[in-house]
Length: 237
DNA sequence: TAGCTCTTACTAACTGCAAC
DNA sequence: GTTGCAGTTAGTAAGAGCTA
Image 1: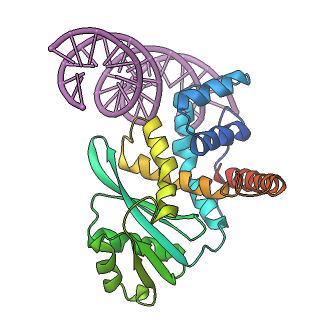
Image 2: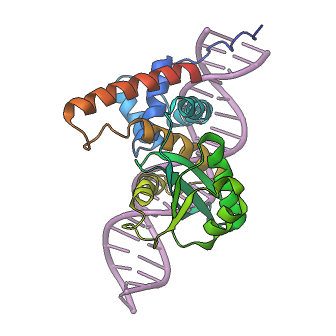
Image 3: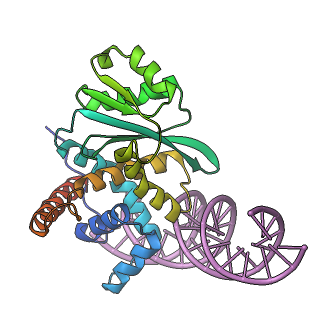
């Protein structure tokens, strides 16, 4: 028999908590911005409490959203960018499919063959073996693909690393850069990884809710995205 | 009484501006 | 163009207060 769920002891209703967490991961807003937005609606809560909510519910939200994501495309686009965390250089590995949906993000200290293998292994846990892998000219990718038998059937295409050539994944880095800038840099690896995970899942959820589709489709997609978020937020709480 | 929330203070990074 | 400085704004930590 499953144990009784932990009683809900938060002072604020779930709807407010889920909205605050959603705002933080969906838009380029600081905790203090969200504090102000909520205050405008008559909700008095400190920025520190909002940070606690993000810390507490973020990992569960990521897990639940991941579970609900549809099967992704079979062509992977990979790239890595340098991010500084507390002044130390780290590499943010990112993979998107041919539709621009984020498959995974992973922060690692290096960008050598071992790091590439770790990232591929992470991707293979939740995704099927791809038919093609698009990367830049970094040698770690080809070395890792050679060493991983699961990937031998995939076609490896190397392109020059410019925003134009590997556009899908390069574009996917942009919101992250914007958030990083707004947050004045990430402060710790674990917090950054948690944030980036949920940020990626939230972006996927709202992927077709902007200008690439007709207004009618957009509204329908937005409705579906909000419904999913609400369901997932209830589970995470 | 456990744990949620708030207050306060700290450090780090960014921004704007003047001086060179 | 660059450097240095001050002001601003961000995330974070610790501890006290509050509530179910």
